[in-house]
Length: 257
Image 1 (cartoon, one colour):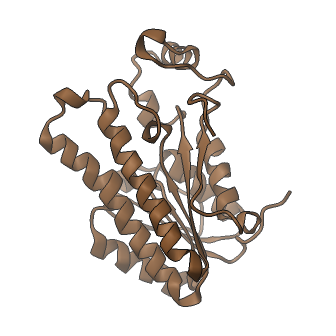
Image 2 (image 1 turned 60 degrees about the horizontal axis):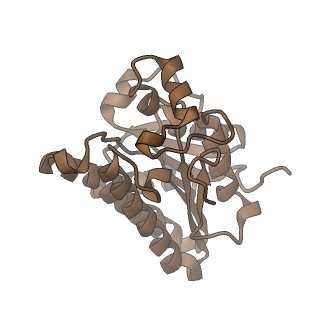
C-alpha cells in the first residue's frame, strides 16, 4: 500500500533536529511534503546539514506565541497547514520521591505544556480549511508505570490526554489528532542512558524482573524510522477514519495495543 496525502502538503515538525523528529522530516520530504522543521536554537546549531528544501526555524515549544507565529509562517510559505507533527520532548530519570520541584516543572512545561501549545497552533491553523492531521510522539511510559521515570511517564500521559481531547474537539472540523507511543528507540535520548551501548541494548531487550520490566518480545529496539513510518500512516489519507488513537510501537514491550 502506498501512502497518499503528502505530495505538495504543508507540514510542520517540532523536535526535528535529531532522532524521531529528524526521521519524520526525511519521510515527509521523500513523500513530497513541504516542511517547516523546528527545534531549539542549541539543537539546530549542533545539527549537521538536513534534507534540501526544508525550512528550519528555532522554537522552544514552551513559547506559545512563537509556535503560533511559525505555524502562520509555514502556511504563508507552503500553503495552508495540513500536517502537524509534535516530536519535541525531554527525558528525566529521577525517581518520583527524589525529583526537585524545578525539574518537575521543566518536564511538565516542555512535555505537557509544549504539547498544548502545538495542538493549539496546529488546530487553529488547520481550522479555516476544515481538514488536517496531527500526530504527537508520546511514549509507552505514559501508559505503564516504570521505575525511575515516573514523572516523565506522567508528563507523557498528560500529553496523550491533551491530544485525544483535542482530537475530540476538532473531529467535527475534519481534523484528526493521534499519538504514536514508542518504546525503547535508538535515539540519543535512549543511548545517553547507557554506559555501554551494546550491553545497554541487550539489557533493555532482555528485560529485568527486579525492575518490573518485561523486555521486548520482538527481540530488538526500534529505530527512529520505525516510529516515523507509524506516524506517517496516521498522517496519511489511508488513516482518514482514525482519530484519538494511541498507537504503541514498542515491539510488544508493554503487552498492550
